[in-house]
Image (cartoon, rainbow, N blue to C red):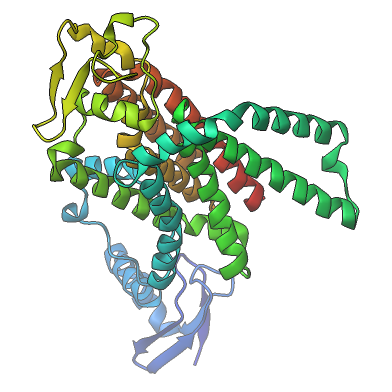
Length: 413
């Protein structure tokens, strides 16, 4: 049998197996080389004309068939699989509004959600109207406010001395232990100062809550997830923190509709003003003192008669302005929502602490949502008549959130 080498381009694809029928029998081949390779294929001469006379269409069809058998292509996208503009819009809206939650086991998710809920529940019970916030603020204003100046002076002096002594450079075993003790003491004193001043500066508790949540969740890692990398653990927190934030907001929203006394209005604010530690401004409104109750105002709010506002004789309606400087009642009422915003901030921040990702897109989305929420809350507070005090509260909330973010970054890196 004579053979000849075929070098013309019959196919540019790689054919692993095949056979050619001829009068002299069937010639089988098994090659991983393309047909147009220098090696070519050896076939009987009688089959050369048969191969050369194949039409281009037949050769292309044969090549496609063999290629599909060797390397099946993925199913092409059909028109029906394309997303509609509406679906694209809702997907973009979802990605804008919600953080990218890390996939973790359900047991881990609920365990971390439970831990994240502990400081949140504590804050709501102690410092909001859903709990005993009015009583707590009154206690701080009446019993602990006299310690503000001594505590602030001692705290400032201690920080100055530690800075002059270069406490950050104490590297020995004893020095490291003393540094940790001193820093812990300073942090506790700063938190105590913020709480003691709650009667005059009601944004102190939310400041402490946001920072304490970051520190508390780091303590959870040191105790229960010590073997997990810090960056991975912090990324895990994106889902649980968002879940607790949503539950907090939903609980507060339901609570406000359960009773008329849980809503926010001027009469309720006046009723809670004195009991939350606010002092009436009799210096600017001397005629608004009560003739019946010593040290009180000349108006009353009847909590048992739909919060009706009554005035004594010769008491002008403008006397309600004696509490215009007091926004304790609003901060106490809106406290759960502030806590929800703080948790949402931490959730977004944790979402872009990914091990294998770049944070630019998540950071941009996080900043957009954060600024939008702050602006919306400020507008709502301004419409409620407490814009001045809430502006300060929002500034403190932003400061506390960035301190908590700095704690997360210090832990991750």
